[in-house]
Image (cartoon, rainbow, N blue to C red; front, top):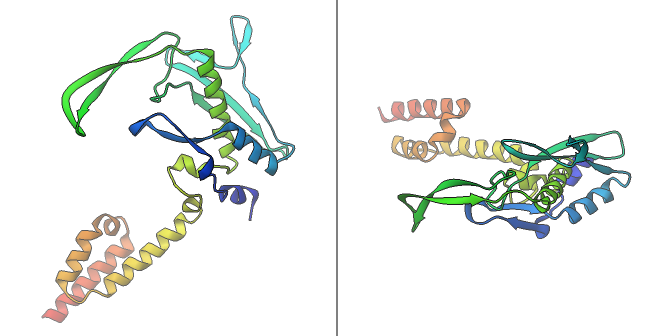
Length: 221
């Protein structure tokens, strides 16, 4: 097993934290924990915060009319260097700029859109916001080495990524067996309606269903 595969299997669920609320909520790891695990794996590893020239001095961000961006680089001490970028965002994951600005979102009541919009404000970015973005960028950068990477795929457990292809293969095999087990056209039709998207996207499975339909129609005749 490679070092990446080993770190990818590391379960970090008890170290996850939440950022934002509702549909904008995101899981992330504390930079302290993430860096500690990285150093255990790569004792000679280090990181760098990229600096940019602004008004004849260096700053840890770049900025244009679209907002702020920060960048980090993580090295494993063995010759590998990976880079990551991240925008400076507020708690609702909106890009922050050097001045406040407004935007509109749909208004919902009882999970239904009222037809109206609500105006919200994004505050201007401060150095505190930039610093938070840098450390989150570092965590995401470290994840490229495997630590907590599954979080960014929206998975609950690490093995859901490492075994995804195996899971797909097992599911295809299970569906094929169910097709073979259909005794009547009605049963096959019910199966098809229940798994329509999977059948259509898989030519082998679609061919199997087609042939099974022909077989059952022949038997009925």
